[in-house]
Length: 339
Image 1 (tube, rainbow, N blue to C red):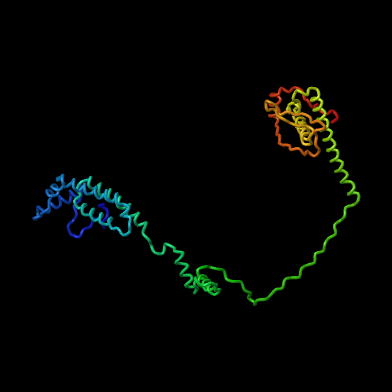
Image 2: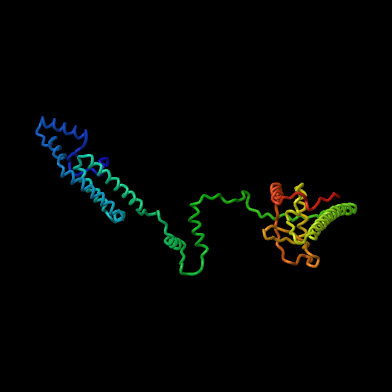
């Protein structure tokens, strides 16, 4: 606290005592002056003050009391109407006059740090006029400026124009556009009549050739798919009739251990059997999917019975794992040799 000239100055003309080398030098200078004259203050007086242990303990005790008082009454001192912090600083200035040892100076510095933090926090809570915005007061001033009464119904357009003229000076707007040769009213040009172009009708030859080609391709693919589905259904019925008691595992039925592409085709064709109700799938006791044909009397056209659908994804890795898991050696659906 010795660095603050505002806190440490006093009303009397007596020079404050100093510690350390500066104090010793000042004492020696006063001793030298005393040799020439009749000086009343000398090193003996300073040594008497420093050697009084009761006075040192009393000063340190007062410093500790001030520090505890600031820490305990922190909330009260933060109040703008409370001047307790100023009183604490004045007491600290009085105690600082008798500081002689390092321990006392350390307590004085600690008190200064605590008081400074408290003063900073108290200053941040001060209300400065103009920083707070009161929307209610602003609305009242605005209505008063516009000449309106909020208790009366109705709106006045001139009042808003008055506010606009007052506020336009606060905004940098671009100048309005105007004609140098005067204003004129331009009439829109008359709409142009659209001339519809006659589309070129395709020739009879084009009409006849293109649909025929597409129809032939669609019919050929559809016929091939239907034949493959019937062929797969024939294999399924034959295996089921040979041994009706033994379940036909789905993966053993569709997987071709010698061709991954034929396995995908078998799955595709088998899906039509399930969709149209010519075959059904179920889980056995081991929760493995099985497939079996549906008797002709049980087939319902259009698939009116409730069915559950699912998407099956298979990769070459999964295909090999299924072959090893079911120990598949031969394909149950033999490849079509007519392809």
